[in-house]
Length: 157
Image (spheres, rainbow, N blue to C red):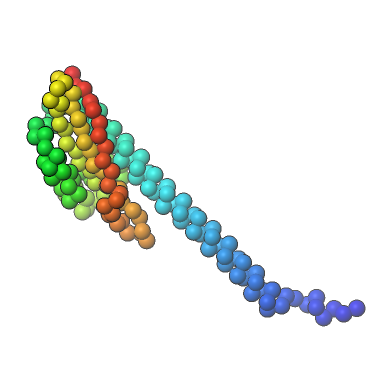
């Protein structure tokens, strides 16, 4: 009986096991970080959508508190909803003025325009523009393709 080969593992076996472990660990880490990014984006999207719905409902019941634009031109709406002109920010689920975002930090910016219908009394078009941030290596990056525009039609009393 030869017991010479039963003493331990060869360097090739150890190296192969190390490489396989590294590949599995990297794959697991990549998948978990991907899930964290997706979860972050879904949370921001949910918070943004909740705030959009809250704004629309607030406008519906308190239209007199909001500025309504009677200028029906597209260029006016685009000027008001320019990326750098959006006046509101979302910080930890609450709506704050954009000027406070420097101190509190914002996960998204948004703005809206309320336009009355020319044909139907008490019907208003509400255009909202929301920007969510992409998290990249713990830094918030704003990308133009992450801007979403919502259009709602509401009736008021």
